[in-house]
Image (tube, rainbow, N blue to C red; front, side, top):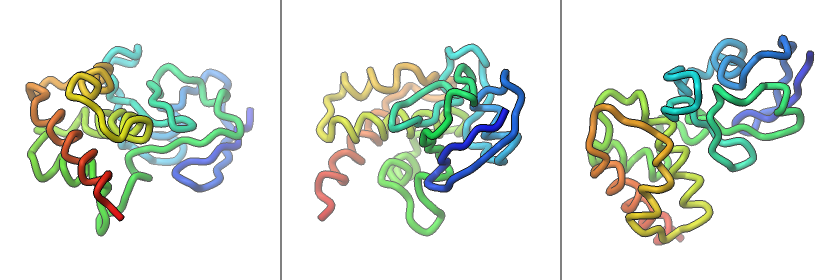
Length: 156
């Protein structure tokens, strides 16, 4: 089957078997490897991307469901010269250790901040609850999201 979609602002087309997941499409067809294969059953959040602005586990979504839809991956968030405030704060605060969960955490947080520019600590924790991290205690991750929210509100 053919699927036409928008990935990181660019129109893309792929011919794929109907059982292809979004995660497999991103990694194997378009070489976007920021979304990670973790549990492959939707529990860990390592494969989180944004579909039409909503955080989804790409391991659970069939690529055929994306006809005409928009997907944003961590690769589309920013570039090496101009980090998104979330990326910058995650780096500045040392919020991640191994980085495996980072793309999913950042994209889940991005959805939160687009919907709620002044989240409470509990709202941040709830927003990233679907993203498991085995390296940190989440404290610096929550701080990075809160700091990014503040910076994004202060931007002109």
